[in-house]
Length: 262
Ligand code: NI
Image (cartoon, rainbow, N blue to C red; front, top):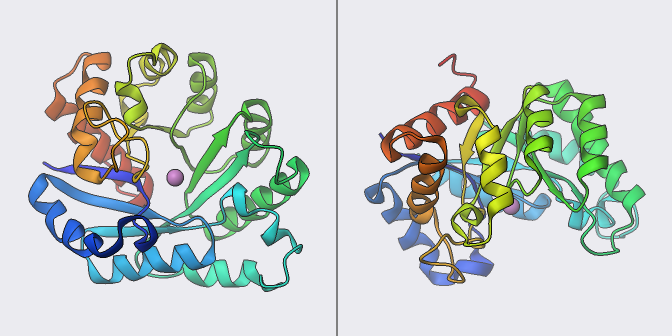
């Protein structure tokens, strides 16, 4: 009855030499499955390589909005045929989602139109391959919703930071919503309200590690075992036991990423 961490970044750059031992130990800490998420082609390949070596790890491949400029034809080192390369990665046995992709208007770069272009290109690939998407959206709520309404992907809005009203709209589109350790932070009233607005069968648990460690580990380097604290808070908000929350969120994730009819 273990945890499914639906959004983790296990890159050598962040975890160094400790990475292998950490991943070897996670199954003994009640972590049953991990979805390791890429941010561009090389980091997606890095996560796929982990999925090949660890049974319980699955991978997602995609171009994060932060890398949109490079993948919009403005960087010499990115091949013109990156969409074909991405498609090839998505056909790997252990790749269960396209992500993470989306919009991030927190900083002025990359330009919004470039982000939208790379996002939409990938939504079209997801539709063609019938694969779920993992959406990142920061300070870009209206544009994200407009695009989701137009392209209607299957998938999850991860590390949700929007209002309860936005959460309801996303649920109406048939999508899932993922919450990180932010849910355990002291001033997260907005996230609690959003979580309350999402039906139990649409909630996913995630870490977004190495970032977003839940209280009492806030500020530390996060890993999938810490998700138990987020599950506890989510359970409190939803009025269920922590065990039931972990179990329900895992089944939701299996339904979305493995097409399991449960
Ligand atoms: Ni992420």
